Image (cartoon, rainbow, N blue to C red):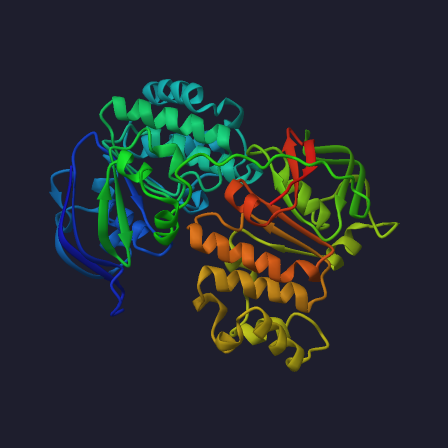
Length: 470
């Protein structure tokens, strides 16, 4: 199915190799988990297996690559796509349609699958992946996790011989992850070869045949699931791996909310004829790190964006004893988006801060950058930084603008254990600067690492809210 012999690859004209002397064989019907620290080469290896490297992402490729019996240099991406399906970490990057049903059927239609057969496959997939409520919807009306489910279903509908998944669980809730495991198990039983690049390991250990550990572009180890389970905690952390057992939410301690940063009463947000958020009463405590969690599509991001003044809503949002309108909420709040690249707009890190407010103070800006460990890169282009550095630039902008509410949307999506802990340390560093610090997340390990309070959402309502001990 896949044979890679002494394969190395460097993007563009770079001298830095993203893959180094890779030797790997994957047999038909195998499920292989690619693991390793962020930036180790997992995604590049996925791109190599579907032909995007080197046919789209050009660079220097050496060694022998065979996919489905074809030498990579002899086959196009289009030809490979007839038998190879890929789900990328960011599903938005692979959508071609505005309607979910059209998107689900797009791949099949492209490869000439008869209409009746496409619709039959869709009915089966609606049942297997539980996406009946997502058909005939606008792509723009979906949450990040719901988009990921559409991308997964669209790939599976093509009934590929080889399915490639890059961080498929990064935006998914625990229940949907279980559904995905069931879908992958059914595909494995049908003989599909599956390769998954993933940081969350626990949900795949009962499914995968082996784990390939990659570091700095090299394959360093291959383990069976049993061998990985026997790895000690210290060794796992040293390798940058996430938990190998399913993490559970911390036990609640239910302290009273004596000092609320934000009070919500009778809040309703609607999209067309659908009520997305309906909250009778909510008090969010001051100067705590609040996790907003819950199933995909439960209203987490809608609530956060309403607190930021982005969404129109009925009801009342108050702080410091006063009711706040949307403009006042916008003045207080900064949202660090899941894809922070959208928020970086200038030519240097220092300029990013200086352009943020009218009355600039370069001394204050540099002091803040030093506080966040960004002084050494102050003259670099923001988009040339690492993911964690970009995140800190956005946080620095929020503090420099004197924002009092700071909200993160899935900040640890696709991060290994070490970088997740680095984010938790950043939160500890800035928590005193904010009245409200909220994190929309499915990452239970992150909640354990830095949160004090949990708001669980379900169907647009607050299901539970409670304090936790760390």
